[in-house]
Image: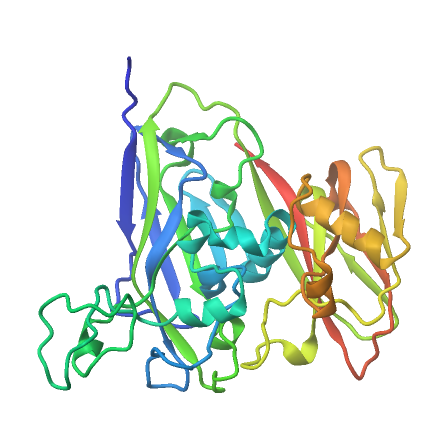
Length: 398
């Protein structure tokens, strides 16, 4: 039986620091000379510390500071720019935490968050568990000692149990391994191999989210903060084969706008060839708040009707009208996934979360030569405006 020279790579960031905080840019250079990158294998790994009120680290106990439990450590990555040495920038993905939330709600359920592939990303099935996964824990049982005792042996008590004085020094920060929502991890075809001769060195530039973009909770102060440390990017490669086989990747372009009237018109010229688009909403007053989830998928007040207007691939003007909330949800889910498994539930909708809209075009449409229009009929007023996040899903062929 023949074997494949399958290699695992780990790369440290270019700007090494003891800790990375909000707004920091973290750059990684992927160099796999003579080999092919296995697309879909890129992961960002590291550790996180949370500070509920500035200087004190989140500890065990009743403190409730959390990230959105459906996205976990994805909450810390605001944007990602992917650059090929031979071709320049191929993707500039923004508003990634919200996009990760929309994709997750459209393709997985809260119960799925207990699977290993999600647990390693610090995701969890509900907000209560999210409170706990961000807290440092002891790597071994250290219960049963007395104050001031040097802890050197396994003394019983249980993982993460309340520990005597001296045990705090043994606690370790939560670590994570996330698969960033980016083009190189999102295949649209059968081939997954990208030759080094096609790309040259690949640069990944991650911008870290603002503190209040990712953290919230009853015990999160206005100056709540986080820091990431020991960051690295891991990926796999195989020997390069002669000639680059056709490779198609999916990417997204986010446009952000306001909605402050009952009849809202959103119009944009999108520099991309797209096959679908997705929309989510949040109240303007709840964005960047220590008391509210910044990636909540809120339902606009009494939304009744949505119209999507554009020219199709044959230049015919098309109007898709969705006449009620259920049609809007149905087509919103369809734009994110062709399956029926998702996290759109009545209880979450009642709690004003997990509402998505959108449209699968059913064809590839060049939106760079026209304006794409969305008309939304609701009961929104200028006293309670909403933010609209429109993600246009496009294809990149290499």
